[in-house]
Amino acid sequence: MSITMQQKRGSASRWTSTNPILLAGEIGVETDTNKIKIGDGTTTWNNLGYTKVDPQTISYTHTQNASLSVWTITHNLSFKPNVVITDYNGNILEGDIAYISNNQITVTLSSPYIGYAYLS
Image 1 (cartoon, rainbow, N blue to C red):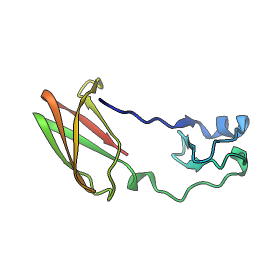
Image 2 (image 1 turned 120 degrees about the horizontal axis):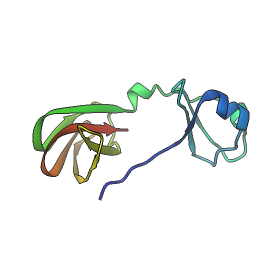
Image 3 (image 1 turned 45 degrees about the horizontal axis):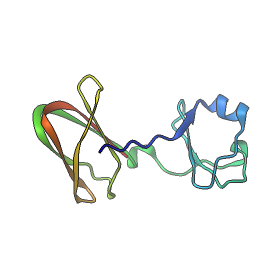
Image 4 (image 1 turned 90 degrees about the vertical axis):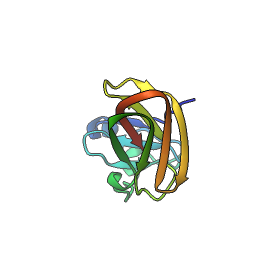
């Protein structure tokens, strides 16, 4: 079974104009700035501070150019990430994910594919 996690997102101007209150631990992403805020359940968007997390350190995109049914991915994120697998055309694929370490996974698909793995 494939699991996809999606955060609330919108442009910086949309967040500012709607000024919502995010639930405690809920993540909001500004799609035009790539800045992130995490809610506390009481503070409005405009009064929350941005996280000091660099999105480049919490995500990784793997390109699988060889058509294989088992992909070995070294990502160097130092944690066990969420994984979304797509074929070359962007269709989501289902497969088995094995966490070899905090920096490596294997993806086993039903047949050989080329495509992408999005880790976060």
